[in-house]
Image (tube, rainbow, N blue to C red; front, side):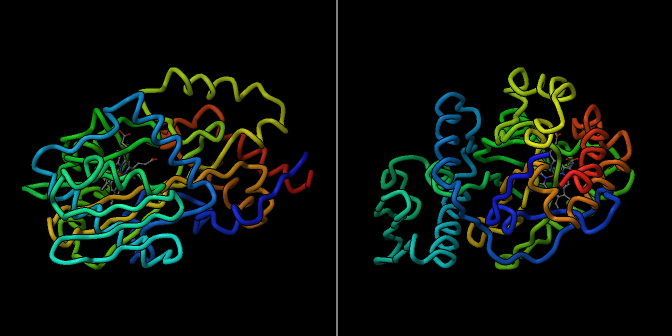
Length: 318
Ligand code: HEM
């Protein structure tokens, strides 16, 4: 079996399993850097732009969320400028006047905070064109409502369908988390989230092919891969099946009070994952042990046992 390695991708990969058994939990921890730029920057942003051009429903800002969109844009610009000062620069030039520079994209922009005519497009779309993360903004009323966002890389859900729904409604289809009170606890936690104290969590699934956009909208394109992947030879299986990990950040925006939810998607093929012995063993155990209802919900029920067997065999073949 041929094992291909890309060391830098492996070093950066946010391996999600701390144990050989996986169950849902409110797995949040204090966050460091909110945004993560890597060598897929131009490719990911190009893909996002194409998706948005074809399907505008991936970008929604309900009218009452306009202040939150500005708050989100400035927060992310500050983050980019402090995390990657050689590539991004934000300078205040008088009350509400700013100068933004993105050297990776060769862009420079003067703008006036909260004045939409000072930007080439709506601020959430503008900043979503400069970070690899998907973005959802939640308004806090009696509950949290997902009232704005740019989501182009959804894992088997539809932002256009979910927009305007409450946090609890959105999580309606997820098995176990209601009985286990995971989601009501997460909701209480999010309602108390404080500015300048961001948190992070991870979520994971498997994806066939290096495909970021596995949204419900495109199901006819990628859904059949779950069938066909069962029939490919072992070498192709290890190359095609990816562990998909979302690093999610939860941030209270300081001016608008909205909750910003960032989703950064990482994909690693099994044949690379298997080169790290601990990851190979733990992932095989998690996949083999995962209860059927969770595997079903994740859409991996048909091939997760083969993935586990493949990973088990990878040590002997390497
Ligand atoms: C601490 C916070 C959170 C927790 C503990 C949590 C938990 C979960 C879990 C366990 C799943 C199932 C994942 C899987 O099996 O692959 C899920 C799915 C999902 N979550 Fe969250 N989540 C959180 C925050 C959020 C936020 C802020 C949003 C923003 C809208 C969100 C949107 C979603 C969506 C859209 C799905 C897919 C639902 C579907 O299948 O239709 N989550 N979440």
